Length: 191
Image (cartoon, rainbow, N blue to C red; front, side, top):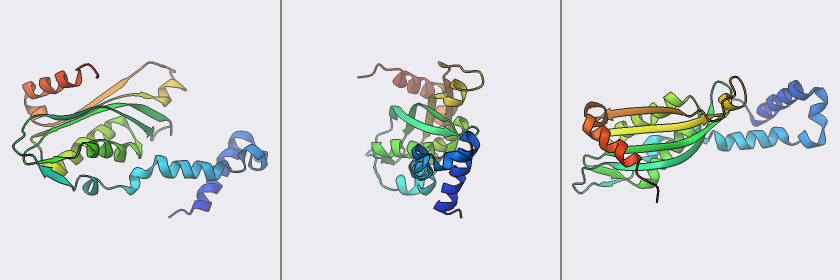
């Protein structure tokens, strides 16, 4: 396991690469290694979180068998290929069988995955897989729309490009009418 001091030294090395050896002694950069590692501890906190813990507290569904959907959940994650941010919104839904989960847990499971180095496809799939594993619903669906820093500030430099990914499980995959109802709910106007 790498120590904090080793991580600080790695940041100093990167600063010297970017700005030259004098970077490590420039006043504005003296505390940068510490600040970078502190920010990364927060940005990548998902490695210290467990979906089973987050989704453990469930409630009796009391016969509810419709779609449970939390939409327009904003997030920021980090692209594992370029260490650039990608941000957007997610729509997370499921159809319960016997148990429901508190609404904040849907946002928290998204955060668990967002706070790791990611690609959007694995991010989307991971959330859906966690819902299926922990809740055993009739269906689970995750749709993510995001803009990617690696597309905006380098390479093709496309500012308005939005990538959309989806993961459909159970009835959302098998039954077009369930998927259509989900999409209709997602497209409802905001409050």
